[in-house]
Image (cartoon, rainbow, N blue to C red; front, top):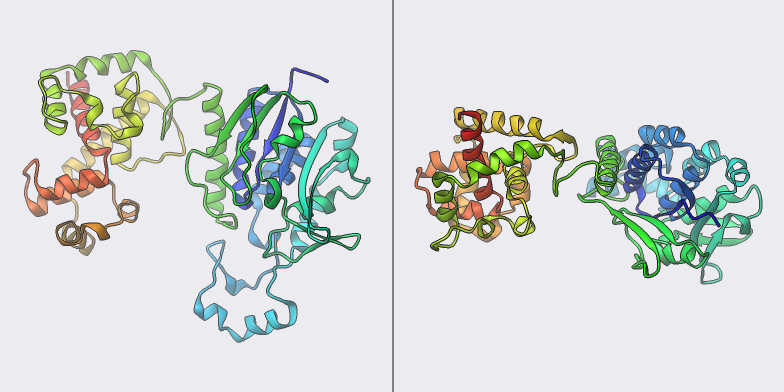
Length: 435
């Protein structure tokens, strides 16, 4: 058996599977050889595409995917690319009539056709590619872990559909046997490939539903790739979400291979710039700010004011950079050059500083009322969708006064723990840009 390539394990997760195409793109760019692949559900379909060595077809499928290419569903059940089940929809006479005649389960004929049109089983076999898929035989109450050489020629498309048969889909039947989605047996089919003798693995986990067995990696060389941000629902066909999932898969994978850095952002570092910023960190002004926001002590300790995920970073400057980017709600699924990220942070910061947030808007008034009387009812993530945390701070200063430690400001810091780090970094950037 060849030892210079990897076996790729692709988890199931519906439209989250777009993430795996982005990861595959990164593996292609890094020239990582792939000897075999196994998957469950959408992971099995992506594994087959890897098996036929056809990235362009995979990219084309995911760029044009929509719910009508997977299942037949009334238009009234679709809203913004997602299945939408409201009371009005569920009481619609036409939909009720269709459900009575055809059943509630979704017809996967479009998915069957999509597989048939794009699968090249002959090419996979001729390449000698070792493909594994997982499904569940509902008729015999047993899981089936199948390799390509276990499947009769011409039948692969049927077992791929079987592996992708969610409970809400009409049952897939093969020779009188009914099948269920492979995720209900093993959504990350690592052990079947380990048992086959492979030692080098790349696992691409997309946080899908199902039985996610923890891979037993002892005795193997395993690279584990997992989405660093939310990738939406398993049936979220919103094209923006799908594109973001692909980009996230690419960026997460390139980070694993050392091509970018960051925790919640992705950027190419510049050590010269970071070192220069570090000199400002130890100025009396910045040390005073650290003391102000931290626990009172003789020596100011920066880690005390950082969000917990950043406290033990060896270099505090990248941590402060990300705090500032989060506070300004800068886009996360993009690759930045570090110096360009600094420019973007500074320009956005100055823009907020020079403009008075529209504090007369009801959203601000309601927010600060809740801070005062209904703190527990606040949902910071909902508010973050409308405004950046730093904009909220500026609005609060206008509405409630500019006292540094007023109740509203302390409450915002509790809701958005990146804010103290952001305040400090804004001051560092002002020194850096105005030496």
